[in-house]
Amino acid sequence: MRPLHKIALTAVALEALGAAYSFALLPRLRRWGATAEEVTRALPGDDLVAEPVYVATHAITVAAPPRAVFPWLVQIGQNRGGFYTYDVLENLARLDIHSADRVHTEWQDLTVGEDYMTLDPDQYMKLTVRVLEPDRAFVVRSGAPGEAPQEAGSLFKGEMAWSWGFYLDPVDHDSSRLIIRTRAAWRPTVPAAFGRALGLEPVHAFMEIGMLRGIRTRAERAAPAA
Image (cartoon, rainbow, N blue to C red; front, side, top):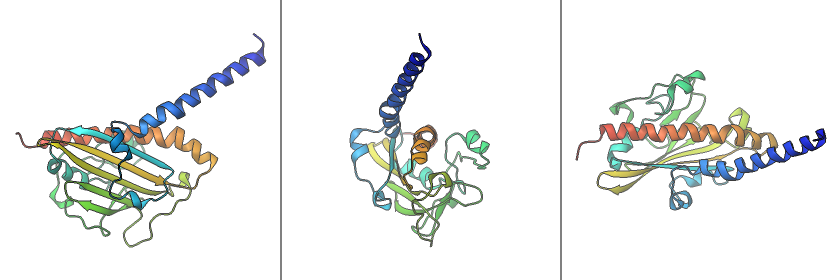
């Protein structure tokens, strides 16, 4: 086979792999565990980022009622109970995450617009509590309390308008659906498109699926016996 033919075949193969990744794998990652109704349903806090360029809805069933799951949600944050996912990986980035294995009463009493979670130990990346509906919804938005919300800027500088919502739907007396929705906006550029597809989306899905499982494990272990 002539070299040019080999190059052409390789290019076609890479293009096919890229298309499969973009049109088959990434959409699945954005809706891991979620039903079609959960993906399309309007949820509290959706209006915080009106024109997102990235939306992901992930979900899992937890064998515990909403009242047993919600306390784990409101203590999320580097400055509180961690993120219940892969601490070892997060700490490779020097985030100093130590996920809690019990509910802490001192982290439960939050005020909308005043309290926040942070993603990093230097508290550079703060997300202010914007929705707090006990046993139903907990939503934070990028930006510190008392400051203007983060505007959409450079993805690579972390300049994202971002909302992160956690929602609980009862399934029956002893179980619930936990839904996490991310809505984010940044300045659309070609490098940002590649960064999103090759970095942000797969990493976000991997870590958030770990978070869902981590919350489920903790809530089920701590839930009172029927």
